[in-house]
Image (cartoon, rainbow, N blue to C red):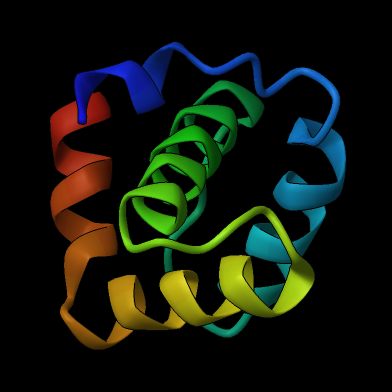
Length: 80
């Protein structure tokens, strides 16, 4: 499934970033714009690998899974 990460996300990135940003708003994690972009791209890849697409519902669902699995602090630590 490595080919999924090669898909051009440019057309969808802004909308997906906004969904991710809104979904993590209540978390006590501050991300730079660059970190938010990296996180969003990861979430977009995960959505596709799970058989989904870049729809609002799928991006939000994957983001919530990331939150519930306590992924955001690990992501922040890895990218700071």
